[in-house]
Amino acid sequence: MKKYIFYLFALLFCTTGCNNGPDFGDALYMTGTLTSSNIRFLVDGQSSIGLTVTSTAKTDSEVKINLKAAPELLEAFNASTGRNSQLPPEGSYSIEGSKVLIGAGKYQSTQIKVNAESDKLQEGVSYCLPISITSVEGGDLKVLENSRTAYVILTKVITVKAANLARNNCFDIPLFGGENSPVKALQQMTLEMKVLPVSFPTTPSSANGISSLVGCEENFLFRFGDGAGKPTNKLQLAKGSIGSASHPDTKDHYESWVEKEFDTGHWLHFAAVYDGLYLRVYLDGEQIHFVETRNGGTINLSMAYDGHTWNDTFAIGRSVGYQRFFNGYISECRVWNVARTNTELQDGICYVDPTSTGLVAYWRFNGETQDDGTVLDMTGHGYNAKPYRTIQWVDNQKCPF
Image (cartoon, rainbow, N blue to C red; front, side, top):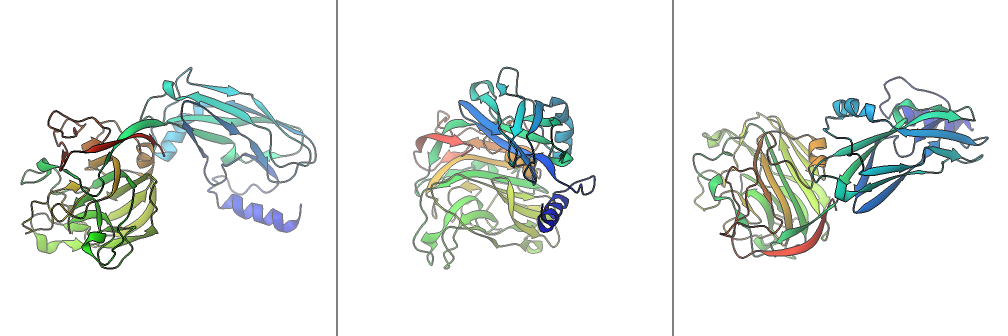
């Protein structure tokens, strides 16, 4: 093996977070685990995923590698990642094969297959099946310890309805307003929504170019566009107002943009997380924006900016009264009084347990409404979402996307 390839491999291995120091020399690893040991497996009906082993150099002779499930590793995996994954239930999966081969002069092995059935998996549960290299026959190759195991994360794909706001509808949360609002002074907060834009306005220099997603005007609002010339498909926090709920003059404002333009026709899971000092924005569980606040303080989601006279409490799909509607679908929205981690966000993109600690309100826009047309707050706290007009529902929306 040429010297520069050897050094390139050594550098790559040392930057992947190894705990035992660099292990120089050619080696084997579970394919796809050099930068992360997690392998995502979306289970939609009867589904399969192939697992292989890779060598860092072409093998001189045939190499046989034995693999097996390693459920005993799950507890340590959860502890190190902050997850709460479970082993998939007995009968919900099978593994075809226990041995793979890397032919002489090859890098990658044959595969084993993990099969799973979504009907036997529970919605909203993160399942993990560790599969490890147990032994190697032939050749003189070590196993990279940090990549010996692939943690296969199984997620049940669900099919749901979603609310179509169509730029003429929205939801209000009436009980979020007033002096006794549960979201008036949040010392920590997570605000989540899952949306699919259908179209963006074509008038970036007009108020009609704004597509409001969720929050309170000029206090804490997620929206696309600003009406002042910015692209109508860029996400803006307008504004993150943080300070004392009872003393507006002490508030600091963190108006900011996510430096990304979004396409239509794709589901997006956005989250804003405030831990008392830092404000982070996530897309599908990955951080895309970060703000360090100057003084910390609380967030008020109970009303538009202080002193405003609009009946403009926390809303989904509108702002500035009944204007600036969002043209798209929404299927999930949640408000928490705790700061959720990125792994919690990832595991809960499609569903969370309504009794979860810190969950203030949870609206699942899946076509089920109360007798008065409102969408139930699934936590049981009574913060139901009231539609502005009659909601149209779209079928056959899959999650994860």
